Image 1 (cartoon, rainbow, N blue to C red):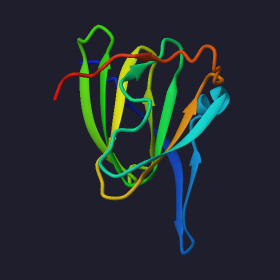
Image 2 (cartoon, rainbow, N blue to C red):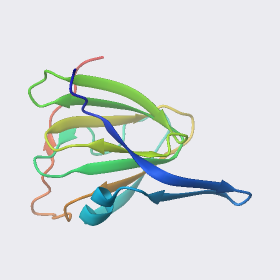
Image 3 (cartoon, rainbow, N blue to C red):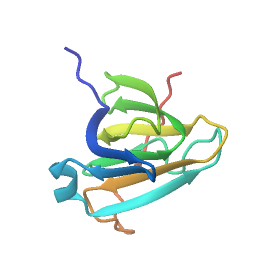
Image 4 (cartoon, rainbow, N blue to C red):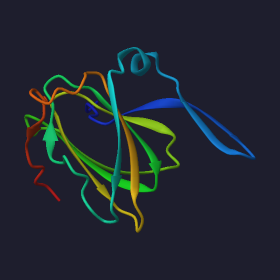
Length: 136
């Protein structure tokens, strides 16, 4: 069986007349969360900080609004994946260390993503390394 680079983590999702409430289900994410950010991306554009990997950071992404395409590759270039996700997913998208990743906004309005990272952001040591994903 082929190893998967993109893994999904369930959430607890509740819906009523007030709309949606989504909460973390995974103790792994909850116990390891050290940093988060929210990314807003213009329609049909690549999210800033694209085409990169981390040697130590584990990242979980949650689509708050609209659609995106994710492309990932292992550093040895042996495994490549491309998937589209939208706000109906209601799961966290996991990207492990040493996985090159980039995301595109593929909708006609802004893409809003929540990112949770298991390491604090350090301006002097970002653990972020550029590597372009070159396949179509």
